Amino acid sequence: MYPASFEYFSPLNMDEVLELLSKYYKDGAKILAGGQSLIIAMKLRIISPKYVIDINNIPSLSFINESDGYLKIGALTRYVDLEDSDLIKTKYPLLYEAVKNIADPIVRNWGTIGGNICYNFPGNNLPAVMLAYNARFIVRNLSGSRTISAKDFFLGPLQTSLKEDEILTEIQIPIPQPKNSGYFIKLAKRTGDFAIVSTAVNLSLNYDGTVKEAGIAIGGATNNPVKIVKAEEALVGSKINDELIREVGKIVSDVIEPVEEPFGPPVDYKKAMAGVLTIRAIKQSLKNIIG
Image (cartoon, rainbow, N blue to C red; front, side, top):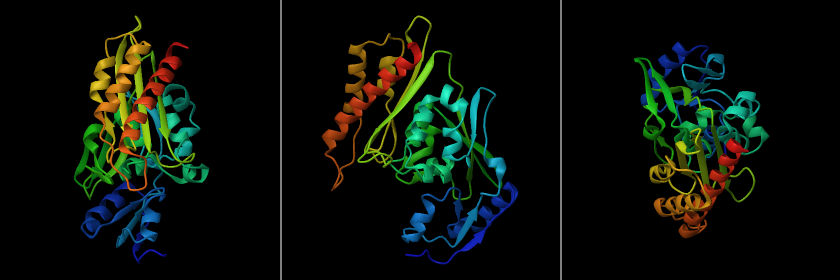
């Protein structure tokens, strides 16, 4: 099936993007970045925007750097750029694992981090990762910019707090502590598929071995990525041992409320697997830190 007819714009700078959004957002204008979700939805006539604004000619939206206490990533940055970045591989293993397990090389060559986050499909890898990192997002419209925390950004399936005339321009992740690591793991029907259940864990240890900071989030199983605050609190201030890890896994299983799917695994299975994956992710994160 072909998309419904639409008017196409290819602006060359952010000022043009914001002007176009301001002019056409009431008519459902859509931003085209990697297009891995938008084009499919348009071809299936799930959505039929009258206006499409292609931002691929704006190189200033693609970057990876550290400054002012944050890892800063441009919204147009491709998955493959994150996957190939030595900085991401060595210092942000949670993000690296999540990105390299997205779909296949074709998708990773075109897909963008901003598109993944803004689409907020329940099975996407990155929304849960952003919650575990306590990330924040810079968004802009013609009136100015604002910062939205990850916990306030994701509202529900395919829903975010981004206004119709706003565009995500930058993702900011706090630069990790010295004794830090993380891990992402997901259960899927096939390699590269959307997650049935996914777990994102980010840990920082004090020099005495106790947990200084913990981030735990679950994706896939629920309509919206869930930050498991109770599980994080159980870890902070404690030394991690097998008993504590099992306790945290149980907390995760008890807290999450998976959605029922007519052709998917049972809810109880998803709850159990969320706990199992959390246990594995904590163990791998700890192994990465202490060797």
